[in-house]
Length: 293
Image (cartoon, rainbow, N blue to C red; front, side, top):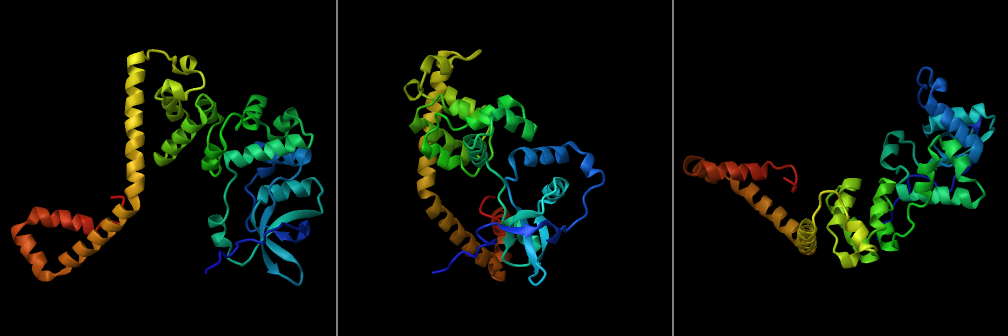
């Protein structure tokens, strides 16, 4: 049984700030930018949220090369910190860092803000620290209110607008899960798609049917047609999902067989002489770089 090798040590360690060596020069006039001042204000008001990412260089001296967090490092120095929490990479390959890091998802951001509020930090203070409008802070804090756990699980690693969950709240839990699955399968987790799904949802699957279905220029006949089409799309999606693995295997085998077939010089010459159109189609299949073509 194979094990997954960790890219970083599981727990942050405190490193003297003078032992953290930047891996690049900061941009000119960085200290005058709004982004830098926002980071300084955020750390001053609510502390450092995300540790720096470093790679150990000299274990004797304790020096580390900074992989991610150059602006935060400058801000911490300005605020007079002598130590900084760091996630230490398990090897020295700094170029692989971007493959290991996952930026904060919307759900993680929600939980982070909830924890800050639970510790006594007011939304107004968060708004000031993050330089974000108070309305947006409140939307992110209440992001998952009324959203079923199954839908949250599907969205946990994704970035999306708070208005997505405003649309999902209009649906009952079962329909929430269906809607999120459709958005993910279409690779379109957008506000407009979420609103369209609400409009195409059957009345019995909505929390407030009349209010949710009311829209400008949309007749009841159009709503009924959207419901039927969406129901058919969901059935089609489930059918494809069930046979996807087998279909992909068959496609890979078929492509391998055709590739060997056209590699045969005699077969290639025969097709070229007598069935040029067929050969062109077969070569297009062989030259396809992926099964998505």
